[in-house]
Image (cartoon, rainbow, N blue to C red):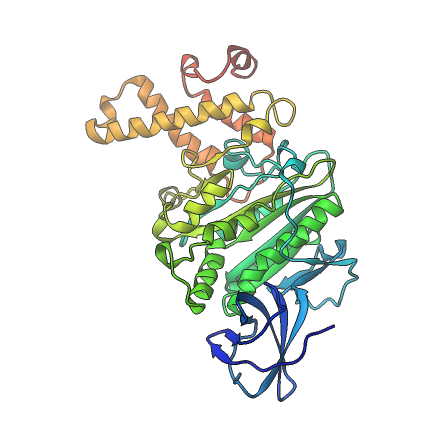
Length: 453
């Protein structure tokens, strides 16, 4: 039964504050009816004794203390789900916006999810192929992992996100789906994603949640939770392998900062709330694989770093929670390399357990280690050449410079092409053969014999 209808006592930005309220719970849905019959929705965001703070989805414009009545609905925000959500587009509140009519729903799920017992988790293994050599070859995405992409303003993270959605696949299982959530993006970016998925024919396996930059702030806080709820249903109840792409998590965190400021909370570092870490963990930790289940939930959160500062709060805290990162590099981008992924700043901490002969190829780990070591050596030699001049370098050092150039131009740079893991490793060997055989000190003799030729 719904609670009694009451009036509000104070309005502040997008918040409505009520006094003398009891028997409510955090995240409870609220319905505000204006005198003209218009309905606005909100949710409880803070409870202090009998003081309740409600954030209104549609904002508080034209809302006063006397022109409305409020009903607390005794239910949290829920998302209606079924497998028919695939191929459909929702807004940041979970409402269909693609114009193709309603769908049949099997159940409603709390968007805050349910806590997974740690002992019920299975260690992530096997991989998701993105078709991008810098990721598949050097920082492999493992099923059940959370692997963020750190970008900067003006870098092509939107293009990379769309390419991953178009190309991602798993081996030996056709039950693969993608949940794509965009927060605070422009209409042009939203249309780009929609057209990209439609033209490539992958839209039928993608559930898309879109919050535009001019949509309410509170929607931005709900959007990733809607996406992860949909993904959990597909992964754990429909036993599918699900990849969730979240962009841009910095927009989400800025919305959280704005809401925290509206509530008068004491700010932490760079104005973000002190609970930013725990809030992000409630999103990122929803990735994983459950014991005795056939599905998996893998996350690629994408975030932009202010002034390319990887130590700013959002990437810093994200790095603590997740298992690695893919870092986009501005200098590579300015040199015409796409995707401009810096392999030396990127890593996948779970990579070693999801590659090799059982999953990818027997030479994968050795080749990746050698590419890392050789490219690091290239950067040292480039620094030396800038001091003494390239002509003064040894013949071996010049080979490393040639390797570095080919590594960037051929291995890292691939535009919109889709490479299989075999193709990626074959290209790696082609480049490694520029170096003398005795320089390949990270590859076993057995592997060199088999692949060096």
